[in-house]
Image (cartoon, rainbow, N blue to C red; front, side, top):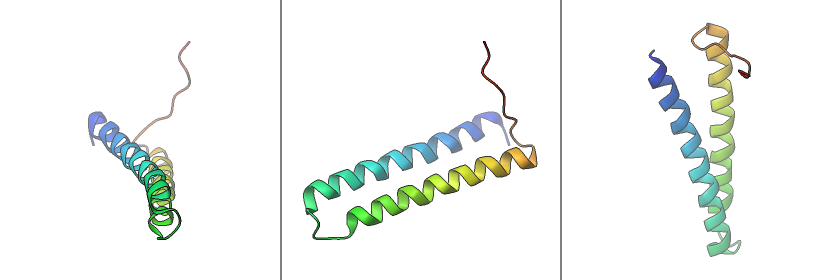
Length: 72
């Protein structure tokens, strides 16, 4: 897998996470607790965050990506 594809995959996950966070805020303000849309959006956000962490850990373990320190 190319480096740019790995970067795009991580960025896509981050965009989806922020999108669901924003959707949860919007639903919370609009619905005022009458529906479960806020809970569903925040549940999807948590699931995406956990999936992203697991994908990164699996990628490090398989050697697809290599962690590095801060260059200074």
